[in-house]
Figure 1: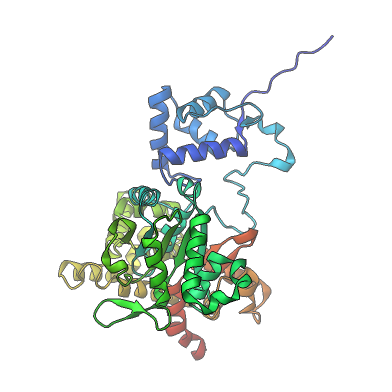
Figure 2: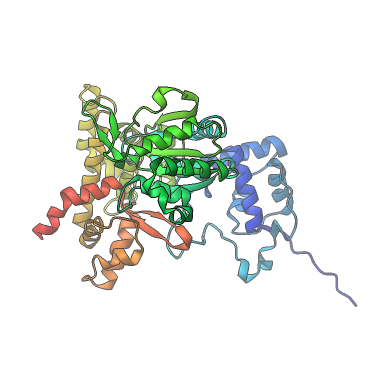
Length: 480
């Protein structure tokens, strides 16, 4: 007698199904990461309830996190909310039927677990309206966006976010020129990035500036890209009156950008990041083709969400008030807030916001008095405040983890992103266990930035942290 095959109950999203859902959610609720905060989950849930009726937050979290099976009817309801059509065994499947070669990338075991690196979208919060506005501009007549702001304010992060924006990347391929780790900071880097092998195939272009620029414009017209030139201040010099001009021999940057502005047809777009405003281009005409976005800090709500993303637990109104006061002191400066989060999460506080506040209370209250008394004009002294925050963090690191401090100080000599092994090597005289602990400490305290080109994780210090380490803190090493 044939036994009737019992259909297994419940399903879990496959990678394909989850990617569909994640992309659809990001279109409705721009710039949520892989792991939304509780407030963000509630916002998404409100839309599901509006379209599908009664629905629990726990059920939606179960579907999103993919750690256990959920009822198929609920998965379909979520899909319908975002105008998706899911198919059984393609977009969702019973957890027991997952092949070993296609194990799900759940939040508890991300595909980057071996490096403790999270998805680059996970730390992105805020600036949703700004990103929407800049996306619209790039899709229209605008050809050049210059993102200007003080160090650590999030210029490179914003450029990165725009470069991976689905609507932008659909018609423009990102192409980066990073002056941070460039051995020579000249226009040659831009020419090489735009022309690639065509530049070496036509050596005469190196001798004919006019022909070089025309070849680059032609390439940008026939091969649309999003050209991102990061840290352009490297080729700018102050005129002593608040403005800047191109370094000697690098005025070709201005000629290149003007040609992009003036070209009759230009499908490519350019994003520049700089601490300083650009020299005037095209005599100030064509405002519809060039835009300066002066970046400031995150607002209070965005900053609090960022602390949540860093796993700083806001347990009550008092701890939220402490963080809010800190946010106001540092004007929502992302780098300063990240270092504070790193301090709170690690010893001696171990996540205790109140203990961190009490120990630093005299310092913070003195800064608040300065603001109330008008001694700190908004943004005038923010760089000094952030630099002081970096110094405080490094002093704390020196007291608690001297090998980690030594690794950071010696690693500041590295001029580009480097693999973990390179960072371990700078303290090669230390025991292997201490090397690993030092590296882990720098990551836990958010002192290392990272990128993952070609499946290889590389690390570096932020420019400001690097400068402080080189200029101030090496004195500790010399004393020892």
